[in-house]
Length: 173
Image 1: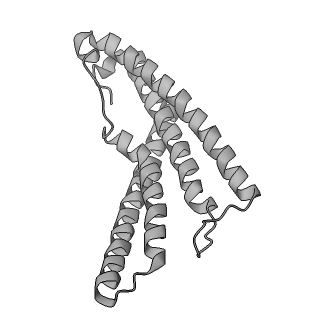
Image 2: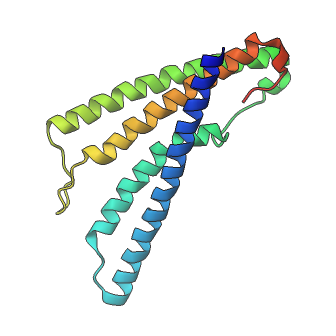
């Protein structure tokens, strides 16, 4: 069981790290928007790159932060059923929903990989004057789903250990 617990801990560290990176991306995105507004209203010449890169950072924030959001229970949870069943049944429901979610995330990993591979193959670029390669913001989608998949796997392991180990009581995350 120690190896499984280490895997779960490693996935938590990875999710938290990407969450921090996502937070820094928000700060950079805010700085870009402030610069754009300042340049527009003071000099009447907004930098055209600010808007485009803020959009790319928004994609990065959304997908790189998804695993972290799960780790801190930031996603919407509907608990009316779980609150009405025994602790043992609740743990089993949690395990089942985690496995179903993992299956969905794996599908999204495959789809985002195929999309990124196609984008790289055709050398897809932004339609703006920057002609920025879109593989970089698209890679954040794949990275985000991949790390979310690892975090979900860690949660599955943690829940399975909790179910298997009677000494852990009713705690599950």
